[in-house]
Image (cartoon, rainbow, N blue to C red; front, side, top):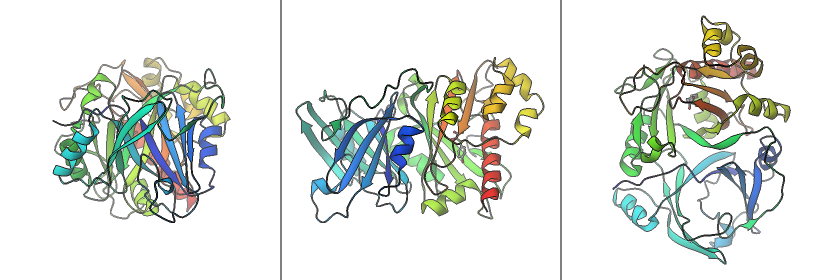
Length: 391
Ligand SMILES: O=C(O)C(=O)Cc1ccc(O)cc1
């Protein structure tokens, strides 16, 4: 029996010491610090917005010995020389059973099932390595724990009130991986076989055997999408796998591989219920977003498409928000044309670390559970323009 995985409980970021990323997530994106674990060697800070939790990990001092206080709890150390998002934690019922099953399928389990407890109860976790780059998955059973976060962490109270500050972020919508060339199929098979994820079509144009190919052969990228078995209920996890098809190595996927030093998590989609207000507030706080090419809003029928969806083309153009009505509702692998009132809106931040690697996305789904072909093309072009300007 494959595991039934729900939305990630947390996504772990590992950052070099004193680079200020925690401050950025708190001051610019208004993630709230909820719990901290600090030893002389490591600092782990849980930052939360709605149900989206980032665990920000910093090594303060080189580990002198194999002692638990030198290690990151609920994770493995990817030993980064640069910022990286490397762990996605899923809550599961039976950690020992799932770890045994994964091991019998040939998976590496760097942290075997381990119990951690404090006065509020106990949790069991294990960590399994993904076959994609530096990614690992923490499998966690919190059912016996009553504390606010996890044992080993101290709660932080009253940092600021996250209510009614104009930022409506509810949960992680999807996680997009960049795979090495030729690696997406193997990643697809691994997540299907080991975690019971199911393939879904990004939009009605995608062919099941080919995947979604963006741009011409030799220039673009290949995308494949998966969702966890609970995805159909709207509480699962969506994964998007991207691979470069370019022959000259100058696109955003190749740039990620080069600057990240291999495959890994490229971006995380944060679900919002009000993308216009949230984007405006975040821009005022200093967040920087990719602006789509000017031709995006003037292309044939775009203004009508936006108006038909009940949105204002001027507002979306002013903020740089993309809107797409081609993203299909979840119909498994037999996606059909979706009614026009279903649509989604997206906007992508600039990379949040010093390198052109990891970024965030805001996504506002209005009935559409796929991904917008026009939006992905627009992001692709916007990033190409930005990268050309950086050179
Ligand atoms: O639209 C999304 O959120 C995706 O996840 C698709 C995607 C994948 C890779 C890119 O470099 C850009 C867009």
